[in-house]
Length: 114
Image 1 (tube, one colour):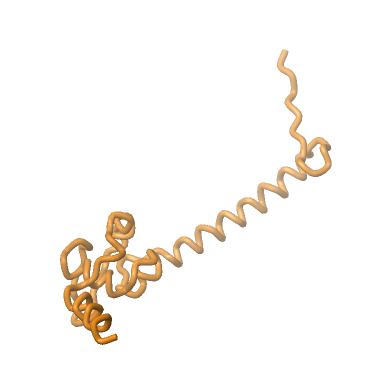
Image 2 (cartoon, helix red, strand yellow):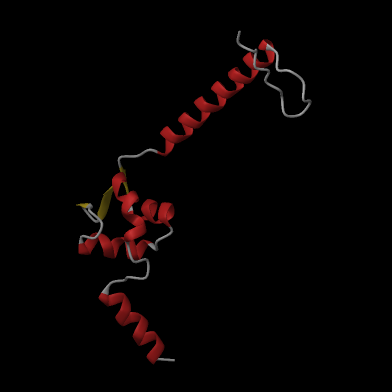
């Protein structure tokens, strides 16, 4: 013969009734659907350099540099880059300190002029 397993609520240490369980399940369903909506709002196929920068914390100029060097697989559309969402997974492998040669020259000339 199987023993019935009793489930207790955390706050009152009272047995959880079927009605309480149904209420909790409905709340959980609503929360999960809200999470899915939020995830779908943030899902994009492509990001601009600014959006990619905002999501990863890598400076926008550095993101552009990595697009130019091919370290980020991106497509140039006019003057803007389109970065596939999959590249977000590879962002941790990028050097956040890397900048273009011109930017390094500007930085050196600022320090020399002081």
